[in-house]
Image (cartoon, rainbow, N blue to C red; front, top):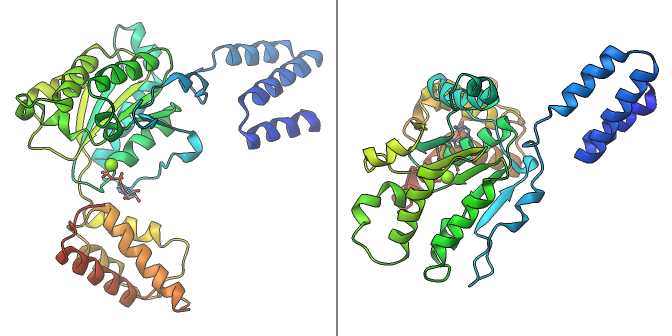
Length: 331
Ligand SMILES: Nc1ncnc2c1ncn2[C@@H]1O[C@H](COP(=O)(O)OP(=O)(O)O)[C@@H](O)[C@H]1O
Ligand SMILES: [Mg+2]
């Protein structure tokens, strides 16, 4: 390939411009054809034609609704650059996520046999253990733009408006392959218990349950809730997969500590195993925080390494904070 073409391709990648990428690819095809490589050119062309339009573009999402009362967006669209996707999970949970990703990737193949991929997934589990992160990971690995529904803004929108706003959102994703993320929707899990309430919440719940039943968009729908005991059969039934994102165990703590401290030097004889077991019972978010706080202390004090003592101190501070009334497992 000529140097100019390669350069153009690299520039398009570094700019993240789909149009320029496409343009460069077309130039490459043209150049290969001119060189007489017609079989290669034809096969490259075929690859381009079959490209997945779901990847990347979020332009069609401009019509997503905002709350009339506060002019507050009811949804947040996260670009690929904003997505975090490195997670530490036990193998079982990791394979549940991977399965969803694999089914999405093989959706056309599955459809040929009359099967549908797992479209609607419910994640549950204690706060701070990776439900939100998991949704971002799913978006990253499927290449779908992540559209996060903000129920807080929705509930405070004009009375009676929330249901129609929710319908608008579901309508929009009918045409745009995306990962619709219903974060912190504990209220649907509790729906049965609040069905006698009046006001905006039961209205949203009813609409949402209906929309969930009807959802058949080309992307994925992921919902997350902190509740588990409240989940009843009526909720389970509406999802193609429901799984827990649990508290990290000793093994995950070990990895969480090591990855969080990967960029700093640590004491040679640091007893990682001891620290990891002392952190059992904490959310992943808090384990990460303990490690970060220890590293920050070392930096602020001008120490060359993060010591076991720094981690112990950070851990004690976390316990203290808990005793002062903060939820130990909260993010
Ligand atoms: N499984 C995990 N692997 C790595 N980091 C995690 C994990 N779970 C949580 N974290 C850390 O904790 C933070 C909060 O996690 P989050 O996904 O928002 O929790 P949840 O949505 O379950 O309350 C994340 O930003 C990340 O730093
Ligand atoms: Mg969350």
